[in-house]
Amino acid sequence: MLLSRGRLLLRAVLLSVGGGFMLWRALEARAAGAGLGGPSRVLGERLALVQALVGLLALLTALATLLSLRERRRRHTLRLGAPAEGGGPDGPPTPRPPSGTP
Image 1 (spheres, helix red, strand yellow):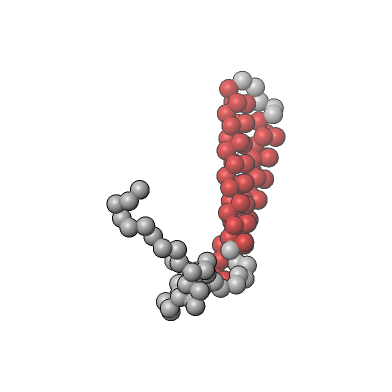
Image 2 (cartoon, helix red, strand yellow):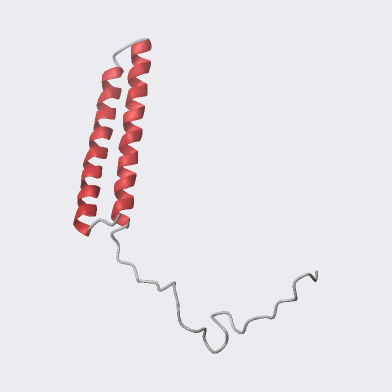
């Protein structure tokens, strides 16, 4: 599925905003959990860790999306014409031994 440059840019912006929000929520949850004790503190720290990981994943995905927007030179990998005079890009073809011989 091909997306236009505008849609990719919108996706990158939304992922960045969502990732930043999740990191902010993780910091807030960690600060709120510092005053708690016992199992509640452990649960709060684990939730903050999960939120931070989701935020980082969203930011990495946004970065990958932005990197996909770079202009790249087109490469023609499919050549349907006859091979070059020398036999191809590597030079003349090497003869193969007959099948059945080691």
